Image (cartoon, rainbow, N blue to C red):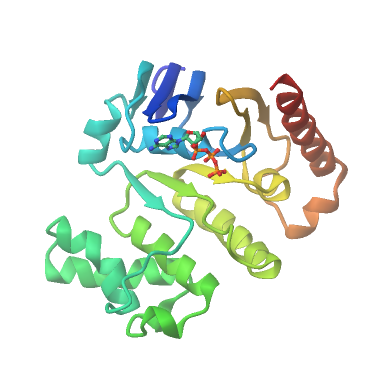
Length: 259
Ligand SMILES: Nc1ncnc2c1ncn2[C@@H]1O[C@H](COP(=O)(O)OP(=O)(O)OP(=O)(O)O)[C@@H](O)[C@H]1O
């Protein structure tokens, strides 16, 4: 697909370790179009994080070609093409929530007025309007993760990369954040790359689900979601949802048998 936001062609990555080479990614081919929500799912060690880090220019493939917005990932990183959300919220405890969200804006040299406006707007966007002056420890785990999403959105990059952002949260909070994330995605039109271990989370959120398997890390299935854009939580009881979840599970199982 020309004009893809992310384009991967035969991407390979082998880590050299003291225990010998680790083939983390093998022959990865994938295009991610503008505005897609693409989830990566697979067992531990299948290379999900590694692939996300390659897109972010934080790891360099040892083979193949990878472009982000038509540039090398490293150029895209320097052009601030993406915001990145980690599994742990990673907020600085000595900064307020507003101060944390402001940090990338300070580093990028936005004016004081622009910083203030963007902090206010992005905190509103993640429903943390009244919490700018609070410290991270004063917020629940789910609220901290929303603040870390606000930090990744504050400079309005078109791409949002999320590495198991809700993995450490309980089921109910996770459900709510999933709903909020879908709403945010619909309102902002970002292109999202999302790593998860959870089949329901992947199926609920994604326009496409990329199933991966380990040793070597590779793509075993890519599933186009038939679900409508509008997704209330109880869509998880629908036949379409259960069918997609079933196909993901089959993909995971097939990858396992291949090992
Ligand atoms: N910097 C590194 N040096 C050496 N090996 C690495 C490095 N980073 C990752 N690996 C190895 O590459 C493989 C893929 O790791 P990766 O973290 O991408 O998997 P993952 O699918 O994200 O797993 P998890 O779900 O546990 O986070 C694993 O075998 C891992 O041990």
